[in-house]
Amino acid sequence: MDRDLAQRIVNAITNLSPPFNALDSLSQQISDPDEARAFRLALGEVMGMTLALLRPVIKKFPDLDPDRAA
Image (cartoon, rainbow, N blue to C red; front, side, top):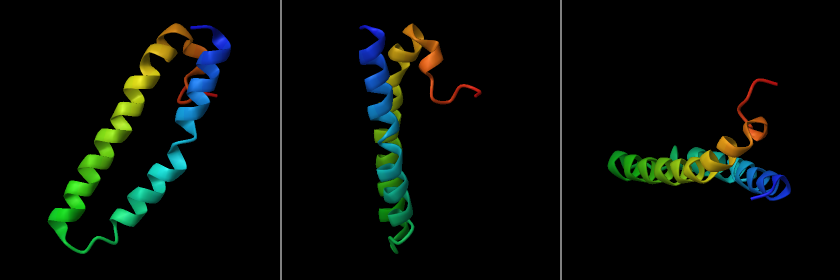
């Protein structure tokens, strides 16, 4: 993987944050506690998958880590 592709992958994954945040907010409106918990657990799993996609990119290009100290 070259640096340009790595940057595009990081950007694409970073762009997923707003929809994930929106889903988290919407989950607060689920009145059934069991449904809410199941939804948030599933959301957490999906978010974790994005980290699994990001890890090899950051390993190769640590400076592209969106969480690194600015």
